[in-house]
Image 1 (cartoon, rainbow, N blue to C red):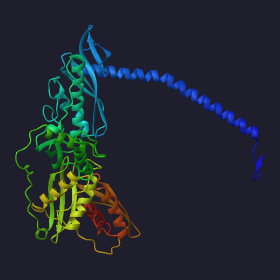
Image 2 (spheres, rainbow, N blue to C red; image 1 turned 90 degrees about the vertical axis):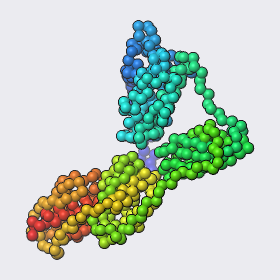
Image 3 (tube, one colour; image 1 turned 120 degrees about the vertical axis):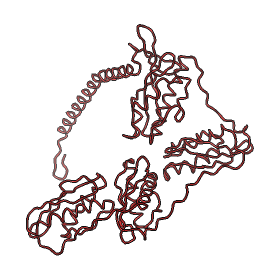
Image 4 (cartoon, one colour; image 1 turned 180 degrees about the vertical axis):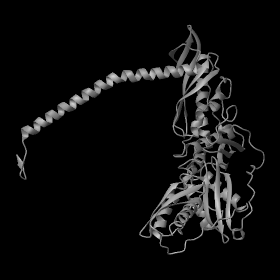
Length: 492
């Protein structure tokens, strides 16, 4: 058989296909054999790791026996044949995913230890639930204690969801132990019979994503007729879906158990919890009290400010935000975020946009960035604090006379940036600047990067240190330009 001058040998094709099939079969067999051999090893190692963890949460036990009671699995610890405690597996819903843990309790139901076995929370924030300072709060708790966030357990600042996940998991573990080993009755869900509620307005609050959510629920004729969100601090844009749909769903269903809004689970749960707590309370007498409004802050007349650099700080979402504001000729010429500890990725949008918006509008009253409200407000308030303080003088670099012909060679110079001395090398060839390189600096990573990348190239292109500063990295830009000026002073 031939096609277009190319000949095909049918027998050869069959032979190659058979060989390929044989090799594929051998590979599959080898893989199956490997899996069979390693599966036992992997399972054995997992059992060894589990045994070590069980020993950590119940150190008095010498051996553990797996038992099943009331449809749940428990590990009963024994010493000299006597039961000394039980280890319970539990799981909570965290910000990054399931938080899995083991809870060790005595046979009387007192917690001995809590160990987290699986944690996907935000590093440095949610992962703090694994610290002894947080887990230690559960030691000594028993089935009669509330084990409730805000009552006998304190949440980690900035990690409420992670804290709640661990707390609910521990409480659930204690509940299951009490039912299975102490004969306690399983708790019944508090079902509220709305038809029997007195007419009136009920107030309540629940824990949202970032803050408490306060609601007012109006009941008339045994029905919920209105739900008003009085206040919340959850992120605009992200939480909007929950506030737009969950109250309406509760009214339509006449039940607090409704589906959470997609993408806003924790805000949705906070609203449902707030409504449930409201309906479990007594109705208010008279009008619903309005939330206190923040006093208006005095306006700042930028046109009357002295030239100089102003520095200030304010509370962001998770940390203090520090800024530097440069004023020249009665105008804000730059706003630079010097430092902050807010979540990377979430805060970045605010750090990159708010300073430019303030400069463009020549006003502090700018819109916050959706999804980064806390950081946005922190930057705005830090700028307000800066402009309310006394300015620092701004050193103006001595401009190079131009055009200038330089001696060929490589020269080093220094300038003062925001974090310290910036050292550069400048290469001159044929009387022209051909290369500028930043050799050393102590500037803030992430904030100074653009200036370090762009200013040297701009100087080479302009054949002068008099180039525009990079927005958001004004002081780093100035330090590089001053260092180049210093280096070129030796090349003349």
